[in-house]
Every structure is written in C-alpha cells, then in structure tokens.
Amino acid sequence: MKFFIDTANLSQIKEANDLGILDGVTTNPSLMAKEGIKGESAVFQHYKTICELVNGDISAEVLSTDFEGMVEEGKKLAAIHPNIVVKVPMIKEGVKALKWFTDNGIKTNCTLVFSAGQAILAAKAGATYVSPFIGRIDDSGWDGMLLIKQIANIYQLQGFKTQILAASIRNANHIIAAAEAGAHVCTCPLDSILGLLKHPLTDIGLAKFLEDAKKFA
Ligand code: G3P
Image 1 (cartoon, protein in one colour):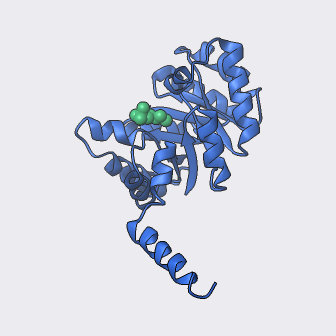
Image 2 (image 1 turned 30 degrees about the vertical axis):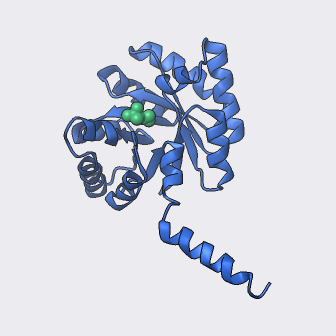
Image 3 (image 1 turned 120 degrees about the horizontal axis):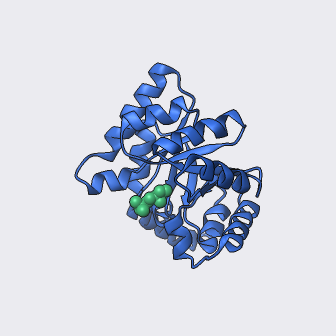
C-alpha cells in the first residue's frame, strides 16, 4: 500500500518525507486555504515546491465545475510538474473531464467519492485514483471501510485498473483497516502516520534495554 500525506503544510510534508516511507501528497482547496495560500500564482508555486520536496504523485484539485473549465485548469496544473495528478470532483462534468484527461495521458484523482456507483463511474472514465472519504462516511453514521471493501471487490471482479485511495483518514486504525480492506493507497494526516509508531510495550521494552545496556557499557 502506498502512503500519501494529506496536507499542504510544507513542514509536515518534510517530516513525513524524512521518514522515507512517503509515496505522494494530496491537497484540496480547504487544505490550501488553511496554509493561507492565495491567488493562482501562489497556489501554482506551492504545488511546484511540494513536487520538488517529494518524489511521488502530487494531487492538485481543479476549482471549475464545468467540463471546459476543468480541462483548461487541469492542463495548466499538469504543466507544473510531471508528478502532478489532477484532482477532479465526482460530478457529471467531472466524469467527462476524467475521460478527457485519461485520453490525453494526464493522471487523475477522482475526489468526493461516497458510493460504489461513483467509484464504478470513476474507473470507467479511466481515473488513476479514486478517493472514497472514509472519515466523512463514518461521521454520517455509515461505515467508510465497508465502502473500501466493496469497491476493492468490484474492481477486482471487473479488472478495473483504477487505484483505491482511502481518504479522509482520521487515525492510525483507519490506515490499518484500509490496508486490510484492499486500498492501494492511504492518504493521511501526519498524526495518523505517526500514530502507527505508537505502542507502550515498545517504549517499556526500549527503556529496559537501554537500562540493561548500562551494565556492560
Ligand atoms: O483528501 C480528502 C480529505 O482531505 C478529506 O479529509 O478530514 O476533511 O474529511 P477530511
């Protein structure tokens, strides 16, 4: 399973990248706004900086909601760096845009996916990645991980090549469950990635080893 970090914060991206296990970055308009990035040139520069920091797929989201606008924006985003993946919302115009990007060799991430039907459409349009939002599904009283399992089963049965990117991850257990459910990628906040490290017995065991080491140092 690939690990992406879900943030536009450069210091968090650097910290995750320094672990040596990072395969890419996802952003969205909310995450960009959180970093105070304003204006097209600042946004484009920020994507370029991220691409220079991390050697992997970097999702950059279109803001248009019509086919022509998405294609124009996506072409400009894809021109920033070869690792840019154009993020497109799961709406009717988005499906058309996904197909256009597929036909023109531009990688895509279909975002805001909340059902298996939407995931089938994304795969039919040739999306590189499909992003079911696990945490938001859980928040609404359903089970986000069941959706990952359902999509993984459908994609396997039908031979779809689209990679399942588990998004809206809220904790380390979500990452483990997404791996078990068959997600190809997990995009996570830094805290959730670091949460995988934690186990009290590791801390207790290390403290004991270091204490015993003093006896023969
Ligand atoms: O990549 C999509 C993800 O960022 C959404 O996460 O926590 O806003 O539901 P969240």
